[in-house]
Length: 108
Image (cartoon, rainbow, N blue to C red; front, side):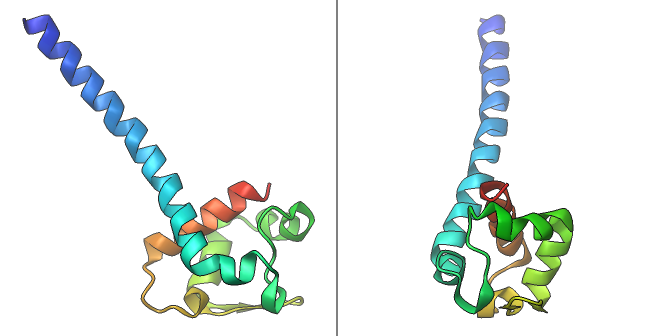
């Protein structure tokens, strides 16, 4: 009985780590689909399209923390404008971070 309990605990801990990773990916995709895709799927205002490796190459080279900062605070680059929080001030730093990470991962 004791061994069964230990096995249950180990399985539950493993499931938590797996679920956490999946939830982070799903959250980033959800934020992207609901708030970012309007520009980043079509290239509005110079937004790099998700999956366009050439458009993202220089941006990714700056590092994800810089891209998150630009998304949070806004940025005007040589090819377009990123409004702060994509123009949605209700988005949290965590939501912005997860969406940027999602877009970067899809654009490498």
